[in-house]
Length: 160
Image (tube, rainbow, N blue to C red; front, side, top):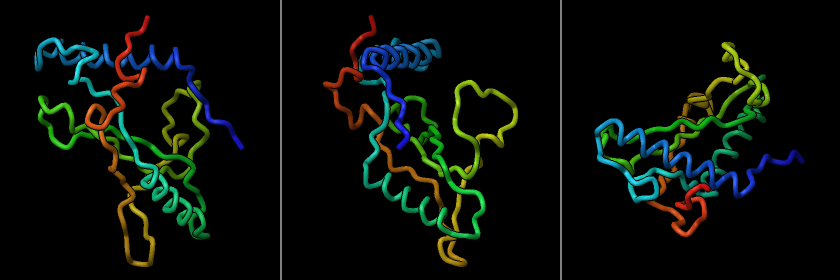
């Protein structure tokens, strides 16, 4: 079994602190909101994704991949950031939409190019049963800080 890449805790703390500083600076510089504290409640931090929902996506992927008519297989999922409203003062309605990706190559940070086909194509709908087309765009995430582990070291510890 292929081992998933992991991030050491110290590096994860540094990178999440970098994100909070970056996000805070964007809002503070835009004059939309005044001086958001990088460790305050208004900082968008991440997403909680229920395991049952991930299982549902895997079931759809397996059904697609088992269909002999589908020559290219789903081998990854793409996450899109989304916002339920365009209200710049509502910071807690940010979500992730997950979409199965058909084809493409293994993801490598070293591959930078203009040929998007190497990254696969989004499967936005899937004909599960002949004539019954269903969306395969999933939005079941809950943004953090709405549902967060506020005691997590990744939540608000400042990077050193």
